Length: 113
Length: 112
Image (cartoon, rainbow over all chains, first blue to last red):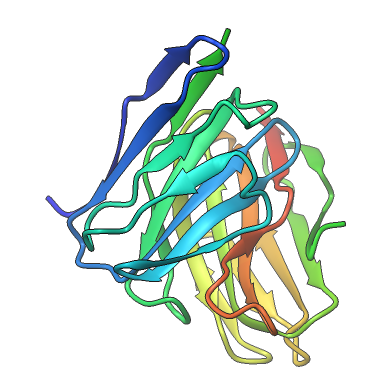
């Protein structure tokens, strides 16, 4: 089955630790995205990648880092510099960076204690 | 400030009633996407609009993009409890190549 997979679904970390969220797609999509969702604020764009080995900062990139070494993978690292990391994180991919719909994973809920 | 403004933020309707959700931008939208989300889950794609004046329908949901490509509406006819959830508009906005941004979302409750 083709799709986009985020793991794990729930993640707990202690304050001050870095944590990496996984996002894998087998749809052969060029573009991938990471969003953060907080209650009442919709989706805010963290990073996006139009093609492998390239990525750009979104609207709230501070405290996050990404890599795009393989077409199918776009991991997101939440660093200790992120002031308020507890949130619901969503990964998406689309066939191209413009004019095609994005498909979403099921999300990872990160709780930092 | 949001580049995409959705209204209303929340909506409670009686089953069987019609409703409309709006999505507005101050810039030209190159692609406008409507999604539905159940709380704590991923987004499900509903419809994509690209041309000014375009209108698409799926079952009881109709989406329109205005001629200027700066506003879209999502209309649900004869709402049912299964329509409940969060509706989000997403778009590629002029001047932001490759960025897919979203509005704040509209939470819909349908009372049986």
